[in-house]
Image 1: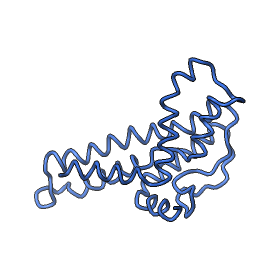
Image 2: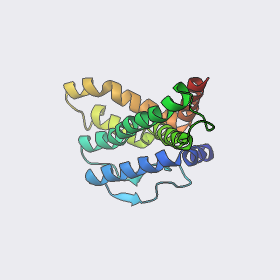
Image 3: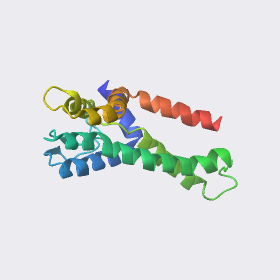
Image 4: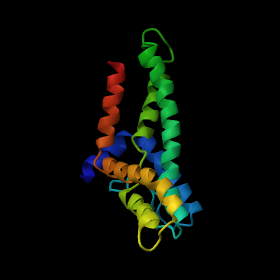
Length: 177
């Protein structure tokens, strides 16, 4: 399964590299020890930063959510900025000089959307820090964070098995049909 995962990360290398870079920044802010600086590697950590777990609950939540939220916002914006001219306005290579720019912007946006979720270990650690026996958060935080943590853990497993690329690819193909 690692081979398919690495191939998916190489296909979406702009988003994978940016995700690793954002995780690196957030992990440094949270005081985590960074074990490796390589963002695109040929193992299960490709597209992510290999780091130690944060000591505080806020650090675990930040590492699990902040890079994904930034990726979602910018990926959605870039994908829309490329797909609207290509799909809705029917811009093609014979009529418009900006066609290659629209294709590149769409590719970068889609690659960012394919790399939204953290590693499974980071998602499960965030869940453990909020809902586990040792690091239980207060009731208000547990209620507010239930759905986001559930989406984060499910998305981490979906990304681990490369289902997200198939789903986003099908969505983009559906837009052009």
